[in-house]
Image 1 (cartoon, helix red, strand yellow):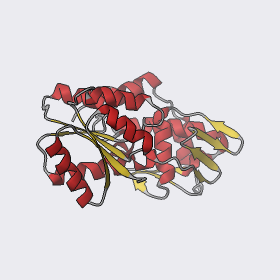
Image 2 (image 1 turned 60 degrees about the vertical axis):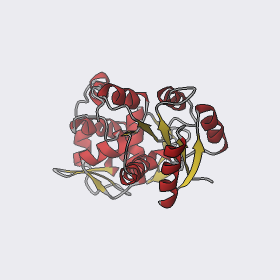
Image 3 (image 1 turned 30 degrees about the vertical axis):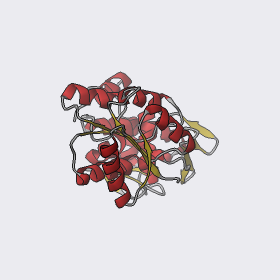
Length: 260
């Protein structure tokens, strides 16, 4: 069972309904009624997604999320919280703890499946440990290493995820909004221009090896990552040379507001 969804839910009827709907949709499912059971399941098989109830008999779902996010093996596993708590404070607490999405009970089977598919799709490129190489630029997510020939390239965590997404989807055009959804997730409100700041940083890091030209700007549309350098890199070089906003400003913008 290499691609199972782990359902951590202590209410038997709710657990049974969730599992039935997931299996009907073609997913393999592993069940757990408590955090200890969930830990055993995860040791045996790393799930592609965790559906996690907030209220559990031993440890709260929020506490378990924090444990998963601090473990290198499980830090990138997508997590959807399931709970009857409806106030914004609880929702924000769950998301800030590291949940990728939040579903309030009761929910319909259609909503559950739509959220599951969206989170898996959004996190899939970041979840893969497969190294990607384009035009001599190599990104290894398992080792968290980027190289251009013998040159090692240093990037921050957000720039690393963004470059990984680009290299996993070459020759496709993405708007700033689409990149925010795919890389940042759709629960964090940041300005579209934040994408420009991070792309500028990536270009600056790639400039010494010439790989900055692989990132193409389509004015008024978005960005595209090329399989080979464009004929003219003037636009990329101009952006690479432009002043970059201080790191604290960009990160502050990125994490300033978490909402639903």
